[in-house]
Image (tube, rainbow, N blue to C red; front, top):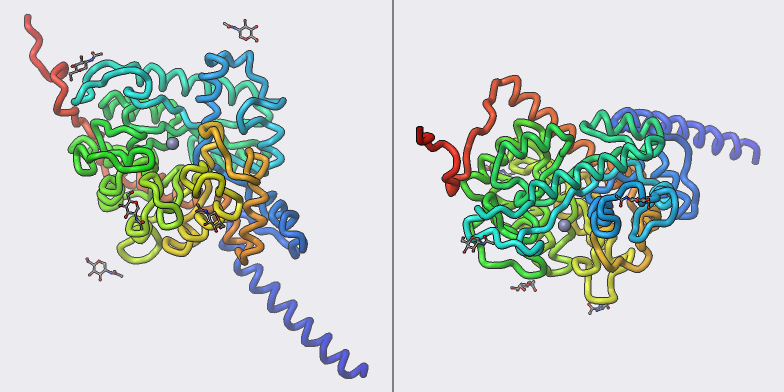
Length: 419
Ligand SMILES: *[C@@H]1O[C@H](CO)[C@@H](O)[C@H](O)[C@H]1NC(C)=O
Ligand SMILES: *[C@@H]1O[C@H](CO)[C@@H](O)[C@H](O)[C@H]1NC(C)=O
Ligand SMILES: *[C@@H]1O[C@H](CO)[C@@H](O)[C@H](O)[C@H]1NC(C)=O
Ligand SMILES: *[C@@H]1O[C@H](CO)[C@@H](O)[C@H](O)[C@H]1NC(C)=O
Ligand SMILES: *[C@@H]1O[C@H](CO)[C@@H](O)[C@H](O)[C@H]1NC(C)=O
Ligand SMILES: [Zn+2]
């Protein structure tokens, strides 16, 4: 009897040591190694995973809510207590959030009551309003220095998380916010903007949009001439190309052109729910780690419209989108971009930013490992961001010139002044 026990014990010891070696080997390849077994309860396991590897959400519309509800009066905003909408500090903490992109969104001209004209040349205040949204985001970040930290780089994200802060990044949601000008892109970058979505729900001078639920008639057939130049400049200065909201043709052309990894800051899967706003499989197949694929991360949107039939959006259906994107593009290419504060309705079980651990618990139950979940929560976005930074450094070292392209419909620039 004792002999059997000794053999079993010996075997277990060998297995344990082998396991430990494997774990240490694996953990050196990961940002945040962590030890020990996970709790049996899926929610507790999810919370433990997220403690080491918190959520970095690709798209949160808190600045837009502050514009609408508080006219950007930061004094009137109290993020330490329950806010209208889906986001405040206690709920961010409960949801194990380590960072998010603050969307500095302003609506398409036609949704804001302007007629930009068919060539987008009428003044529409989109640049002014974007500057106001950058301003309000920064003022809010500054108002809570123990919670938020402005992040301009992947290193800034890691530093913020290490210090227990919430890394706060800025994203512009649509090239209609650029006033048709690549110079404006460069200045947004100076202000800290680290992604620009190529379109919102409208076509613009740079690219075609996918509309809302159904794709509108194309205008350029994807990217325009200045849209091609825009991508080159985004690559050169290290602004992530965001393909959420874009027409399929725009996304496919952008994936061919970009030298840097890309993101979808808040988009789900069209194979799971067939609306134009979701990413189709033939685009997902172009994303990944293999030959002829572009590195990228598709950050799943929680908006019930895009998740499933009315009344059918749940934690499980959001998890279905995550799993489908992972199946086609790979688990290293999926993330989360909730769209909180930008959506009226929410999936049941994912009511606000406190609920991310519930989604991780669902995926843990479905067999996702701690490493896969750490990628989903933020690791994949970090890899993509680092990749884009490396491309920008390389292009600049090679002496790539800034894009001086001017939107060709403009007639106000490059003309000899009458003397
Ligand atoms: C901003 O909000 C604060 C607090 O509610 C209020 O006292 C102040 O008058 C507001 N300022 C403006 C300019 O509306
Ligand atoms: C915008 O431009 C179009 C021509 O493209 C013009 O017909 C329209 O009146 C303009 N609207 C405004 C508000 O300026
Ligand atoms: C998805 O919707 C589009 C447009 O509404 C339609 O043309 C297409 O056939 C649908 N695809 C599937 C697989 O149902
Ligand atoms: C990648 O593209 C090249 C050129 O089009 C093609 O020859 C090759 O077979 C492709 N590789 C894969 C794995 O699809
Ligand atoms: C809602 O979800 C249930 C369960 O997944 C499914 O059986 C049903 O067909 C869905 N309803 C619609 C309208 O898609
Ligand atoms: Zn959006």
